[in-house]
Amino acid sequence: MAGSSGEDLREVLANRYPVVDALEAGPRTRPELVSELGVSRSTIDRSISDLQEVECVGREGHQYHLTGKARASLKLYQDYREITDTLADAGPLLNALLQGHTIDYRFLLDADVYSSSNTPEIALEPAIELLSDATRLQGTASVVRKRYFDVIGERLHEGDFDLELVLTNGLLESIQVAHSEDFEKLTRADTTAIYRTGEQLPWATWLIESPDNCTAGITIYEDGGLKGTIANDSTEAVEWLRTQYASRKVDALRVQ
Image 1 (cartoon, one colour):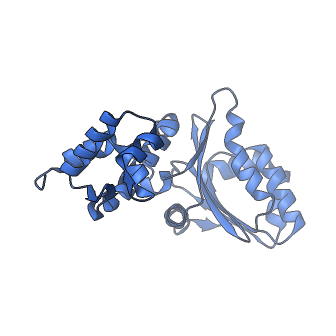
Image 2 (tube, one colour):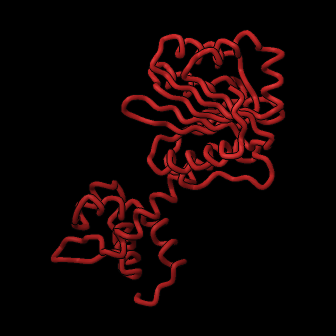
Image 3 (tube, one colour):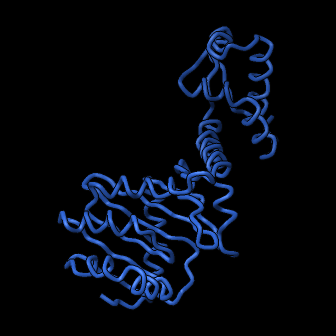
Protein backbone atom coordinates (compact mmCIF):
# COMPACT_ATOMS: atom_id res chain seq x y z
CA MET A 1 0.00 0.00 0.00
CA ALA A 2 1.35 3.42 -0.95
CA GLY A 3 0.54 4.80 2.48
CA SER A 4 2.36 2.13 4.45
CA SER A 5 4.30 3.43 7.42
CA GLY A 6 7.90 2.90 8.46
CA GLU A 7 6.61 0.54 11.13
CA ASP A 8 4.80 -1.51 8.47
CA LEU A 9 7.99 -1.72 6.42
CA ARG A 10 10.13 -2.75 9.38
CA GLU A 11 7.66 -5.45 10.40
CA VAL A 12 7.38 -6.92 6.91
CA LEU A 13 11.15 -6.91 6.34
CA ALA A 14 11.65 -8.70 9.66
CA ASN A 15 8.93 -11.29 9.08
CA ARG A 16 9.60 -11.88 5.37
CA TYR A 17 13.36 -11.47 5.32
CA PRO A 18 14.13 -14.97 3.86
CA VAL A 19 12.13 -14.14 0.73
CA VAL A 20 13.76 -10.71 0.40
CA ASP A 21 17.17 -12.29 0.86
CA ALA A 22 16.43 -14.87 -1.86
CA LEU A 23 15.17 -12.24 -4.29
CA GLU A 24 18.28 -10.13 -3.74
CA ALA A 25 20.14 -12.71 -5.86
CA GLY A 26 17.69 -12.25 -8.74
CA PRO A 27 14.06 -12.73 -9.84
CA ARG A 28 12.33 -15.94 -8.78
CA THR A 29 9.02 -17.67 -9.46
CA ARG A 30 6.86 -18.81 -6.57
CA PRO A 31 7.75 -22.51 -7.14
CA GLU A 32 11.46 -21.57 -7.17
CA LEU A 33 11.08 -19.75 -3.85
CA VAL A 34 9.25 -22.75 -2.35
CA SER A 35 12.06 -25.07 -3.43
CA GLU A 36 14.92 -22.75 -2.47
CA LEU A 37 13.59 -21.82 0.98
CA GLY A 38 12.07 -25.18 1.83
CA VAL A 39 8.74 -23.74 2.97
CA SER A 40 5.14 -24.24 1.92
CA ARG A 41 3.48 -22.56 -1.05
CA SER A 42 1.07 -20.82 1.31
CA THR A 43 4.00 -19.27 3.20
CA ILE A 44 5.47 -17.92 -0.04
CA ASP A 45 2.05 -16.62 -1.10
CA ARG A 46 1.63 -14.71 2.17
CA SER A 47 5.21 -13.39 1.99
CA ILE A 48 4.78 -12.11 -1.56
CA SER A 49 1.46 -10.50 -0.65
CA ASP A 50 2.91 -8.74 2.40
CA LEU A 51 5.94 -7.52 0.47
CA GLN A 52 3.76 -6.21 -2.35
CA GLU A 53 1.65 -4.26 0.16
CA VAL A 54 4.72 -2.30 1.28
CA GLU A 55 5.92 -1.93 -2.32
CA CYS A 56 9.00 -4.10 -1.91
CA VAL A 57 8.25 -6.71 -4.57
CA GLY A 58 7.30 -6.28 -8.21
CA ARG A 59 6.27 -8.84 -10.83
CA GLU A 60 7.16 -9.52 -14.44
CA GLY A 61 5.40 -12.51 -15.92
CA HIS A 62 5.69 -15.35 -13.42
CA GLN A 63 8.80 -13.94 -11.74
CA TYR A 64 9.02 -11.66 -8.70
CA HIS A 65 11.79 -9.16 -8.08
CA LEU A 66 12.83 -6.60 -5.49
CA THR A 67 11.83 -3.00 -6.09
CA GLY A 68 14.14 -0.02 -5.70
CA LYS A 69 12.50 0.68 -2.36
CA ALA A 70 13.29 -2.83 -1.19
CA ARG A 71 16.94 -2.66 -2.25
CA ALA A 72 17.41 0.68 -0.49
CA SER A 73 15.78 -0.73 2.65
CA LEU A 74 17.63 -4.04 2.55
CA LYS A 75 21.14 -2.68 3.21
CA LEU A 76 19.92 -0.74 6.24
CA TYR A 77 18.06 -3.77 7.53
CA GLN A 78 21.08 -6.05 7.02
CA ASP A 79 23.24 -3.55 8.94
CA TYR A 80 20.64 -3.54 11.71
CA ARG A 81 20.72 -7.34 11.91
CA GLU A 82 24.53 -7.39 12.05
CA ILE A 83 24.68 -4.71 14.75
CA THR A 84 22.07 -6.42 16.92
CA ASP A 85 23.96 -9.71 16.56
CA THR A 86 27.09 -7.95 17.82
CA LEU A 87 25.11 -6.31 20.65
CA ALA A 88 23.88 -9.73 21.76
CA ASP A 89 27.47 -10.99 21.98
CA ALA A 90 28.96 -7.79 23.40
CA GLY A 91 26.21 -6.91 25.89
CA PRO A 92 28.26 -7.66 29.05
CA LEU A 93 31.18 -5.62 27.70
CA LEU A 94 29.05 -2.61 26.80
CA ASN A 95 27.32 -2.73 30.17
CA ALA A 96 30.73 -2.51 31.85
CA LEU A 97 31.55 0.84 30.23
CA LEU A 98 31.90 3.93 32.37
CA GLN A 99 28.65 5.83 32.77
CA GLY A 100 28.02 8.23 29.90
CA HIS A 101 30.29 6.47 27.40
CA THR A 102 29.14 4.44 24.42
CA ILE A 103 30.62 2.85 21.31
CA ASP A 104 29.51 4.16 17.93
CA TYR A 105 27.39 1.79 15.85
CA ARG A 106 29.94 2.03 13.00
CA PHE A 107 32.43 0.23 15.19
CA LEU A 108 29.95 -2.51 16.10
CA LEU A 109 28.87 -3.25 12.53
CA ASP A 110 30.18 -6.73 11.67
CA ALA A 111 32.67 -6.59 14.56
CA ASP A 112 34.27 -9.60 16.27
CA VAL A 113 33.76 -10.04 20.03
CA TYR A 114 36.29 -11.83 22.24
CA SER A 115 34.96 -12.48 25.72
CA SER A 116 34.77 -15.36 28.17
CA SER A 117 34.17 -15.36 31.91
CA ASN A 118 36.07 -18.66 32.19
CA THR A 119 39.11 -17.62 30.11
CA PRO A 120 39.29 -13.81 30.13
CA GLU A 121 42.76 -13.88 28.55
CA ILE A 122 41.02 -14.67 25.24
CA ALA A 123 40.43 -10.91 25.00
CA LEU A 124 44.17 -10.40 24.44
CA GLU A 125 44.44 -12.86 21.57
CA PRO A 126 43.37 -10.68 18.59
CA ALA A 127 45.95 -7.98 19.36
CA ILE A 128 48.69 -10.50 20.19
CA GLU A 129 48.12 -12.32 16.90
CA LEU A 130 48.05 -9.12 14.84
CA LEU A 131 51.25 -7.82 16.41
CA SER A 132 53.27 -10.72 14.97
CA ASP A 133 53.61 -8.98 11.60
CA ALA A 134 52.52 -5.44 12.50
CA THR A 135 54.43 -2.35 11.45
CA ARG A 136 52.72 0.07 13.83
CA LEU A 137 50.74 0.12 17.06
CA GLN A 138 48.92 3.15 18.42
CA GLY A 139 46.96 2.75 21.62
CA THR A 140 45.64 4.07 24.91
CA ALA A 141 45.60 2.22 28.21
CA SER A 142 44.76 2.54 31.87
CA VAL A 143 45.62 -1.11 32.69
CA VAL A 144 48.60 -3.19 31.54
CA ARG A 145 49.38 -6.90 31.24
CA LYS A 146 52.87 -8.40 31.44
CA ARG A 147 52.25 -10.33 28.23
CA TYR A 148 52.02 -7.09 26.25
CA PHE A 149 55.52 -6.08 27.33
CA ASP A 150 56.90 -9.37 26.05
CA VAL A 151 55.15 -9.27 22.67
CA ILE A 152 55.70 -5.57 21.97
CA GLY A 153 59.30 -5.74 23.18
CA GLU A 154 60.00 -8.62 20.82
CA ARG A 155 58.41 -6.80 17.91
CA LEU A 156 60.51 -3.67 18.60
CA HIS A 157 63.63 -5.80 18.75
CA GLU A 158 62.86 -7.29 15.35
CA GLY A 159 62.70 -3.80 13.84
CA ASP A 160 60.44 -2.05 11.32
CA PHE A 161 57.87 -1.32 14.04
CA ASP A 162 56.55 1.99 15.42
CA LEU A 163 54.97 2.19 18.87
CA GLU A 164 52.88 5.09 20.16
CA LEU A 165 51.01 4.86 23.48
CA VAL A 166 48.88 7.24 25.54
CA LEU A 167 48.87 6.07 29.17
CA THR A 168 46.98 7.40 32.15
CA ASN A 169 49.04 9.04 34.88
CA GLY A 170 48.10 6.27 37.29
CA LEU A 171 49.14 3.51 34.92
CA LEU A 172 52.44 5.20 34.05
CA GLU A 173 53.33 5.52 37.71
CA SER A 174 52.39 1.87 38.37
CA ILE A 175 54.47 0.68 35.40
CA GLN A 176 57.52 2.61 36.56
CA VAL A 177 57.28 0.81 39.90
CA ALA A 178 56.17 -2.71 38.96
CA HIS A 179 57.53 -3.07 35.40
CA SER A 180 60.37 -0.56 35.27
CA GLU A 181 62.82 -2.86 33.47
CA ASP A 182 60.31 -3.95 30.83
CA PHE A 183 59.15 -0.38 30.31
CA GLU A 184 62.71 0.88 29.93
CA LYS A 185 63.30 -1.62 27.14
CA LEU A 186 60.30 -0.24 25.26
CA THR A 187 61.30 3.39 25.68
CA ARG A 188 64.85 2.71 24.51
CA ALA A 189 63.68 2.18 20.94
CA ASP A 190 63.91 5.18 18.61
CA THR A 191 60.53 4.28 17.15
CA THR A 192 58.70 4.51 20.50
CA ALA A 193 56.67 7.52 21.66
CA ILE A 194 54.95 7.55 25.07
CA TYR A 195 52.39 10.13 26.21
CA ARG A 196 50.64 10.61 29.54
CA THR A 197 47.15 11.90 30.21
CA GLY A 198 45.22 12.90 33.29
CA GLU A 199 41.92 11.93 31.65
CA GLN A 200 39.93 8.91 32.69
CA LEU A 201 39.83 6.45 29.79
CA PRO A 202 36.55 4.56 29.26
CA TRP A 203 38.39 1.72 27.47
CA ALA A 204 41.74 0.77 26.01
CA THR A 205 42.03 1.45 22.28
CA TRP A 206 44.45 0.00 19.78
CA LEU A 207 45.10 0.45 16.09
CA ILE A 208 47.40 -2.21 14.67
CA GLU A 209 48.73 -1.69 11.16
CA SER A 210 50.34 -4.30 8.94
CA PRO A 211 51.56 -3.90 5.35
CA ASP A 212 48.12 -4.63 3.91
CA ASN A 213 45.61 -3.97 6.68
CA CYS A 214 44.67 -2.02 9.80
CA THR A 215 42.56 -3.41 12.62
CA ALA A 216 40.94 -1.32 15.33
CA GLY A 217 40.21 -2.72 18.77
CA ILE A 218 38.60 -1.71 22.04
CA THR A 219 39.51 -3.67 25.16
CA ILE A 220 37.22 -3.19 28.13
CA TYR A 221 38.15 -3.60 31.77
CA GLU A 222 35.95 -3.58 34.87
CA ASP A 223 37.42 -3.01 38.33
CA GLY A 224 40.84 -3.79 36.88
CA GLY A 225 39.65 -7.12 35.48
CA LEU A 226 39.65 -7.98 31.80
CA LYS A 227 36.09 -8.09 30.39
CA GLY A 228 36.72 -8.53 26.67
CA THR A 229 37.68 -7.04 23.34
CA ILE A 230 35.74 -5.85 20.29
CA ALA A 231 37.75 -5.74 17.05
CA ASN A 232 36.91 -4.52 13.56
CA ASP A 233 38.95 -3.92 10.40
CA SER A 234 36.32 -2.11 8.33
CA THR A 235 37.27 1.34 7.00
CA GLU A 236 34.47 3.00 8.97
CA ALA A 237 35.44 1.32 12.24
CA VAL A 238 39.13 2.16 11.83
CA GLU A 239 38.42 5.81 11.03
CA TRP A 240 36.07 6.18 14.00
CA LEU A 241 38.67 4.74 16.38
CA ARG A 242 41.41 6.90 14.87
CA THR A 243 39.30 9.91 15.80
CA GLN A 244 38.82 8.56 19.34
CA TYR A 245 42.56 7.99 19.69
CA ALA A 246 43.44 11.44 18.34
CA SER A 247 41.09 13.06 20.85
CA ARG A 248 42.96 11.35 23.70
CA LYS A 249 46.39 12.22 22.34
CA VAL A 250 45.80 15.90 21.53
CA ASP A 251 46.08 17.11 25.14
CA ALA A 252 48.45 14.39 26.34
CA LEU A 253 52.03 15.21 27.38
CA ARG A 254 54.88 13.37 25.70
CA VAL A 255 57.21 11.80 28.26
CA GLN A 256 59.49 9.87 25.91
